[in-house]
Length: 330
Image (cartoon, rainbow, N blue to C red; front, side, top):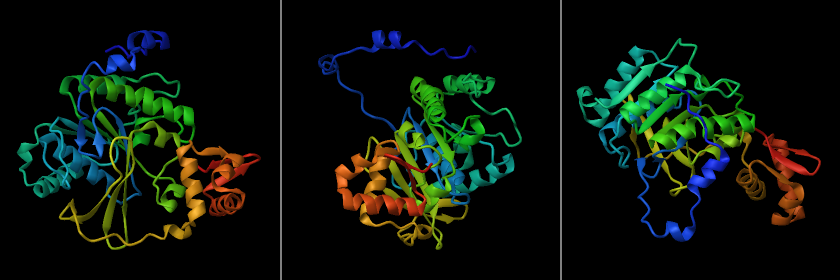
């Protein structure tokens, strides 16, 4: 099919301009979720975690549960067709994992007729857009599949295999997440979950961010999965524009993840633990796209606290200062 052509800014405004009064004349549709409170329909989603934490297993488990509308970890799912695309696991691994997940959910494999999976291991042409920001043939194939099957959730495992851009360049990240993934998600009401590995800084600090802070700003929900030394996986909602922050404790059992009452051990973040003032400044930087004038921070927290906090962030390698500005390290 022909590549999707973005409408001009003028046509978007002309077609979409509406007053708040006019909005009030109609009843807003209820927000829909793939996984209640965690994964909203029709949006790009991030799921991060260090290698070996269980991201792929978790993502496939969500796909299988959501295709049936089965409860997962105490949360409702939406019961729409799902698709799990992986460049990391072969067909045999998908088969083994599917059997274990089906057993954990309490259904036979034959019940999962609306959950689809494809192993792209060994394929080289899996990018959805080129470095020149042109849609690829694989993008067209994926859009055709979405239109035909009406997928409610698609997982891309891992995001770097589906994109030829630079993850630390803000403009490239914004274009990919909003212009490529976001446009597909919006047009078809499909949640598209991007699996990623956190940066060293993101892993050490415990916030799980990867590359540019534009990743955080481009999605409406970001999940992070990490495992402690006792095998407890903590699935935490690091960002949500539509629901409360929350976390779920999970453990591996017979090839699947199940809820546990066991609490994860306290992470010391590899020596990255910060004091109160430095933590507050770190959060303020995240809320403002990763950069602020030093004077803006000082105005918020006072000159003495700001100096000590910024110095702590510099010492930990979490931020850098260039003349009048303080930047988060990507």
